[in-house]
Length: 318
Image 1: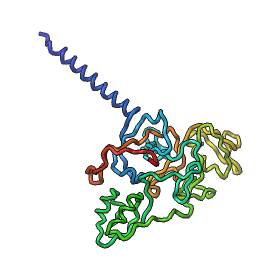
Image 2 (image 1 turned 90 degrees about the horizontal axis):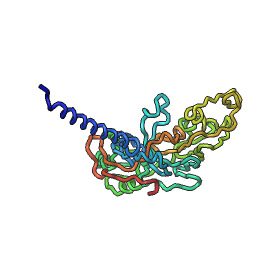
Image 3 (image 1 turned 180 degrees about the vertical axis):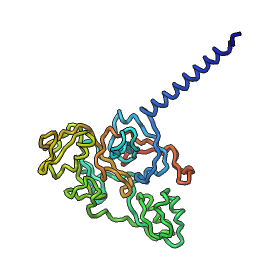
Image 4 (image 1 turned 45 degrees about the vertical axis):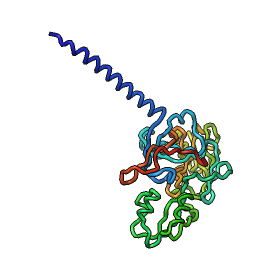
């Protein structure tokens, strides 16, 4: 005897599978072309973004373009042992577009010779002195900083603070003083381009022009460290040094035509950010989108932060 229910069950199953497949397809398309989610893990964008913030990333910006001052999400440019798609995602502020000249003077940012107003949440090192009655945990909760910034038993703390935060702390009776720390001095060897010919540091950097596709770079032994990684890693060539000059494909390398567009990025927490000051230019095709808003924020204890729901993220100066 035939079971008349089987065809109906199979038909319903096919419809359900089609619906599930369509839903998954839509989610994949949204992830690839419209919106994806990234959780902030570090303090490099403090206090604009906080560790634990869930950020909505606008994917369509890859095709419509980015603007100077955007907060961008991109693939780590120095994870050379991984394919591009498997590299860690980083979040920084785009301060230099292809062709821009970027410079830091005593920590102040200049682009194409004009000083750029700090972002609203941009933070800098401050020395905070606590009274004996101060509750460091209450202060940490107010600032929403990780525990690492508050070593036990310390009455003097070095904290990244925005201007608004610093002014707010000065009004607290349990704080003796809040003073900005001076700009960095010296020329450490870990600052890009890692050459004694460029004695730069965190707060004194450049001027440096961001390469654009089609630019012709003048190359010599002195300035080659600026473009070594660009030529060899990002654009796939193999320059060598014959003891007197740079050679590419058996010919002395005196000029080089750039094949891709690049950008320059900084963290809003300048003293707690590894960014273009440490590894140079970021290829434009490493960018995966613009950070558009914070959906919600989660603290270190796993709870949700108040005031971190649907927070919009404007460009620098907004």
